[in-house]
Length: 284
Image 1 (cartoon, one colour):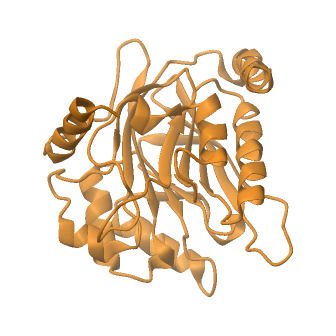
Image 2: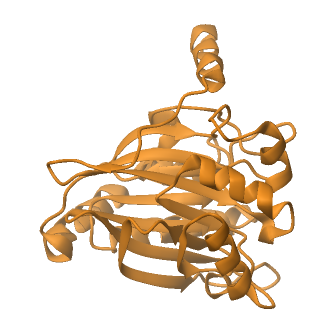
C-alpha cells in the first residue's frame, strides 16, 4: 500500500460519519445494514455490547460465539430484546453462529448447517437464512466462524461458498470470524469468489482483533457480485459507539456494512441459473 493510500485509510477511519440508512428504493432494491460480531458467548459487558449494536442500526446481525450451552435460547432472546431485534436462526444448533434481524426483514427460509467434524477440534457450523426486504429484494445470509486449524479452515471456506451458491438467490453475503487474515489461504479462497467488503468500499476502521490494540483483520463481510457494497468496516467514530463500549463488549471489534440488494421479483426459480453460474465461475 502506498503512503498516500495508507493516509487516506487512516483519515477515513477517523471520520465520525454514518453509512447509508436502511431504505427500500422505488425500483425494489434495498439498502441493508449488516453487522458481523463475535460476542464471546456474552461473557463480557452485555449492556455495552447492546449499545454498540443499537448504535449501528443494523437490519441483520451475524453473530459468532453466541451462547450454546445451558439456557442458551434465553440468553439469545435477551440479546435480541436488548438490541430491538428478533432471533432468526442459529446459536447452539449451529455450534455458535447465529442470525438476528430487525422486523424489516421477512424470513423466507432459515437453516442451521453442521460442518464435518475433525476429532479433537471444536465442531463448526453455519447459520443461514434467505431474507426479503420490501416486496422484491432477497438476500442470502451466512454467519460463520471458521476453524483455528488451517487445513480444516480452508475446507470450510469451500463449503461456505458451496452453501451460498445453492441458496437460490444471486444476492448473498457471508459474514463472520474467519480466523484468518486477508493474505491467508482461507480468506483468499472466499475473497476470490466474493467481494471483500473492506477492500471493495473501506469505511471506518480496518482491524478487528483485539479491541485494545487491533492489529489483525480476521472478521469480514463478503458479498456476491450482485450486491453493491456501499461501505464496510469497524464502526469506530460512529455516533453512539464509544471506545469504552467497544473494549468492554467482547474480544473482537464488529464489522458494519451497508449493502445495496437488487430487486429479485423472479424468486428462487429465476435465480437458480445465477447460483449455478457462480459455482461454475468459482471452480473454473
